[in-house]
Length: 250
Image 1 (cartoon, helix red, strand yellow):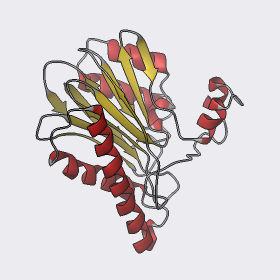
Image 2: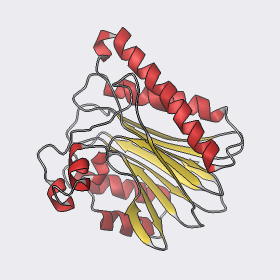
Image 3: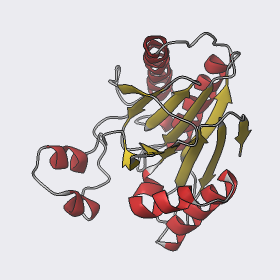
Image 4: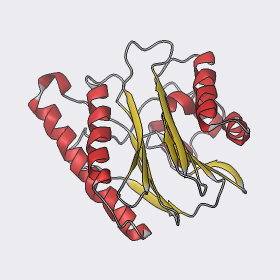
């Protein structure tokens, strides 16, 4: 597998509250993560960075993720652990009260990929059937779309588009969606914060991933387009390409 991750402050925000990374465990399996610190909450960057650093340490000590059941159990157990750490930190440090973060992560093994997510950061897949979002946004407009009350097109311009219904670290407990998919050589996973998905249409993301450029060039192009289209938010992404070669980059 090849991977590349990149984060950018954008053109408007004073601070980057997003964090991301790709980490390798003892068996050579990957854990890719994007965490978007909650905008409007104090210490969103603290929440996202704590999430990344905690999961990195836990993943690098793990091994034998040889079934989807084990992968889903690993994510469930350790996300609950991270949630407790974040919530307790916010309760004990007044400057961090109310902090939270979205989370989207993918455990990538040669046989399968297991995705977990909380909030409105997304995971997309590009394979022979096309390019599609494989996570459901835990957001107000996402719920309205699922209920059929507004269209996807309406959601793009809804005044409460940024309202997230589920986040990591804001409550004593949290529910995470999980799913496992099979990937073939040259399939792609794209994990990203809404700073990318709100600014670059799906069709454009697909076209860029299909280009013959290196993963780092594709990532830089996606970030540049989001900035060209306004860059009002932090922009973060991870690209994982399934292949027989192994390469992690930033």
